[in-house]
Image 1 (cartoon, rainbow, N blue to C red):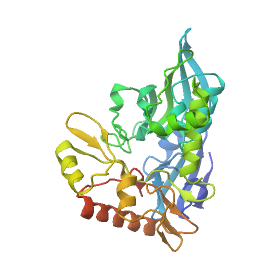
Image 2 (cartoon, rainbow, N blue to C red):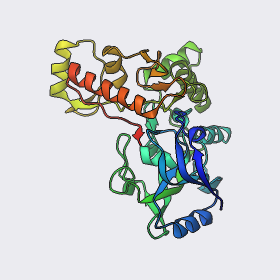
Image 3 (cartoon, rainbow, N blue to C red):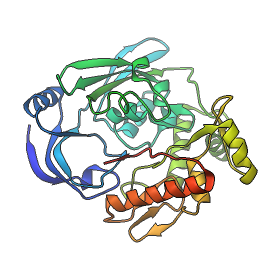
Length: 337
């Protein structure tokens, strides 16, 4: 277990923000993690996974524990289903590709989402009609305070839209070490309800799609709209889609009859945040070396050597403008640090 001093975190966050960590430790085993938590229990800790859901605005005056636990294994299976255990440091998209190689279905709609397995439950990642909770069985996590391993079931994680108990009551108290997912081996249930997937498959002449076809469609859609973090620093969708009351939605339609929406319940409606931001005039807007992506207004980007604080100020300006024009509060999906 090697502790390094004054390490730049630029390679470890998808926004490519250059801030320093007071100290840094790469964690490649659970034993190493337990030892580190015991030895440095009096120190301030910062837990780093894939670095895909954060905007760093300042140096990290703490010991950064970079969780790089690796491994994928079968927990149990029968003729129809398989439960797969993936360690926290596995890259999410590479894991999805692995499931497709085995012809396991259930996470194909979540292709190309950045980040690692360990942070997926925290955010309850989701895209194109599917969320992690739909396949999630359980996860194992270490209590930072007493170093004990605990299993959390799907119900215990209290999943909601981009939410979980790990973002609420247990924020900063546990480190997820592995995730168990239940995947189909045959008779896969495909989720094609989102028009973009259906249109992509139709344009490719596919009438009887497989899970591989669905994944390819999602990848094509995402690549056409979202910048590759390896080329342009970003953290994917920066804002959550707001959910408003049906009453507020009806009032909104009086002034903006073209507003798109998705029914959540009899009393609530979800509005695409990207539409609100674009309508507010921010899509493609650039401020020196940072701005809003030209193809997707949900994505804030670092064109090169931008400061996290500047991108944060832009996010606050966007939130205030959307509030002023539409009387809707939008909230960040990305963690501001």
